Image 1 (cartoon, rainbow, N blue to C red):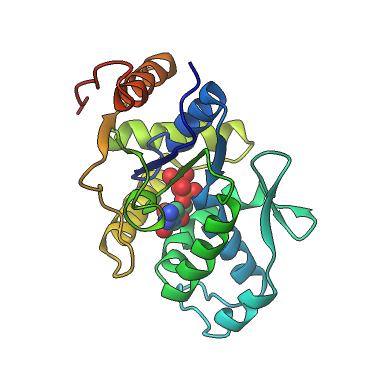
Image 2: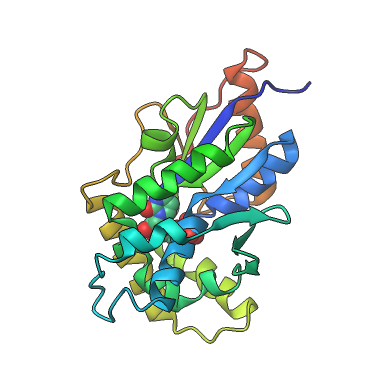
Length: 234
Ligand code: CDP
């Protein structure tokens, strides 16, 4: 049975597998998947290339004006483009990861990204992942999931992902980056990372992808009275 055209918000800490989960659910239920983190990563790459962020993370206030000329959009499904340039690979490097959280803490950056996310999602039937989707971007989302996993599991996943992309990460640096981002993301003033009160928590440290989809299917169908909602896995 086809589920209604709802909005699904997926939030959580770095490398908890939000995008893998959201992509699977999008495929399963025929939803549009939007990766809000990619947008923050795109703004970070732009700031770095324009020389608007220093190595010590000081952000040049000229970034606010410069954003007026920036075109970030998704093409070919979920690939991020800057103008006509495919930047999907560049936004996933450690270089971008190391400065994305300071950029994402800036209020005018957040409102610039939020405006675009709302426009991209205007057609509905969307699943979006990030840090503040269930709290700020789509506070009325019908289904909200908050993902967690043990830190060492998360660092290993991100390490493996970087290796598979041909990078040569140092495990301790990957772990440190996740911890720093989690700290900045949950302590910033504007839209900090936190679980929405009505979000279901999914701790996937010891779960496979098939189990995750089954859990979500139970949750979503339960929401529409097609099944009982599942217990939280925490
Ligand atoms: O993939 P991973 O979970 O490591 O991160 P991401 O989703 O690509 O997001 C990168 C960074 O963007 C996060 O660490 C946050 O600083 C920021 N972000 C945010 O502030 N709000 C969102 N809705 C999504 C991402």
